[in-house]
Image (cartoon, rainbow, N blue to C red; front, side, top):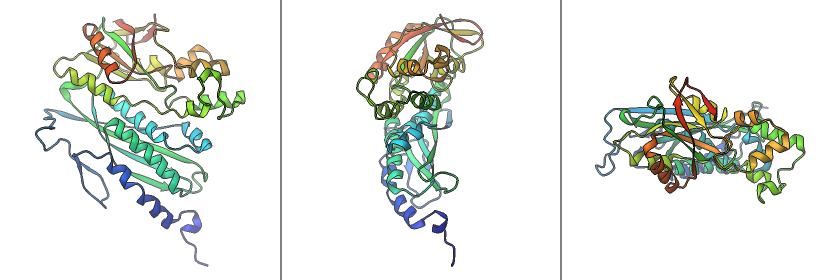
Length: 352
């Protein structure tokens, strides 16, 4: 009897049906800069608008690119059967890195690898990616879906994302202008975001806590609700801040607080002539962190190395403009706190 692709675990007819569901999820994210290329092998995107009303008029544009995944947070989605938010996480992890340069997100690409064809699951995942792109004001320009039996178990899948943006060189934020006296503004996270989930799952498994449990410490939310809370996307808020200062250069550094925690990610953007001094306990901490720490008896240092501890993004700004910048951050829908300052040093971040 002849062997077919379907016999190996890949059903091309089912795959085609699944693919038919996805174009509308991409089109809802398109801006006028997307160039139609239906049926083509690549997405097309204009760097600038042709309309004078919306033209960016770049003088020296720099393209900015980043890639990331969601990590083992996907295991929580797979166990619970809830796949509609991890796509937001995927966009967030890429875009939040990209905007640390001051760049405007332009477009996003995804790569989805699955152990078997599942049109409903794929649609949920891509719906989340589409939602994330709308939040980031980024076009979902294309992607790839690979069905790989034997590489992945039937219910498993993995995600990778790729974001591209642009910044005019004169508006590039690279940390080089951070000086003693600058203020540090911490911007709240929406909980764990997408880092440290191997430790999270170990703690919960070791404690024997069910994902549908509703611990009092989480304020009525189930464990699954808390663990699948999507990563906050900061691009629209940051665009409000940076757009307010098109001439003055007042935001000197931006750090996305992911794996490695506050100190490691802040240190990445510091010149070797300054230190950041953080006031401990100066910002409100989401209850999920003390709950996890108590459940697993995790040391303070380990918590701070693994998790964002309630801060998803940090701005290093000119002292004189700090109050106004905090006002703009709040107007953009994010809570923020002044958490420290910059002083002469050697490129380290530390607690006061």
